[in-house]
Image (cartoon, rainbow, N blue to C red):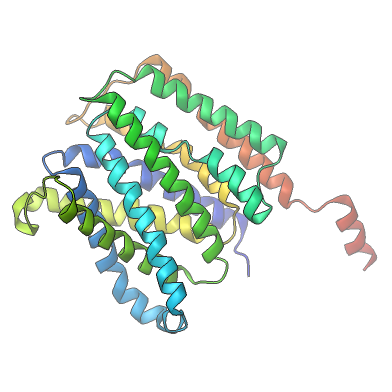
Length: 312
């Protein structure tokens, strides 16, 4: 049974707000290595979800085949690579540029969803995606000089966008037949394992165990798990069962607006956005509105359908 539209839309909006807090919180935990931040974020989220999955999704998990487990853990590996590349990018370029570039995935999702699921955007939806991307490029262009290594950070954020596209496309496929907890728990666990392997394999600083970072940073890791991960990503994964993947991918373009605003308001960061960021934010929101209108029109019954219902 499909939930009411207001519940789906409200969940997506709340999830975007939660995801928008990720980049500023990562900046606040700047003393920790990027891969360690990603690892603790996913580990905390997985540990919190496992008891719920055992209580409420035990039967769904038991029905998963070996191939299902392998595929879900593979999706988790893609998610882990997304966080590894993107969280590193936040430490090398500005918050606005990193978040905008990592949310360039709607184009990839739109093309692939059309080929794989036959549910790509219609003309109005494509216009909305192009408008939103144009706003994102305005934000990134005006903020391109921020950060220690902006070009490297921008490249990593773009790689994170490719991984995010694969992640949302896989979610759209698996959420049609799997319950929410049966899907996200193995995926988050796979991401955690992938990040642990990267920490061991790469010559990147690990930074030590749980006690190394102190209570403040561990609190920030937990906040990343509860807010952007469980409330944000899990909420979007819930909506993927009822909303097409390109719609979810495009609404995430609202994240740079929220992240840039938080980066301005938090005194520990206080990144003052240039006028291009403000203009780009307005353009992004306009693009999201167009995609929402396209989705509403798509779900509206056609005249032929209405006539058939009246006649039937």
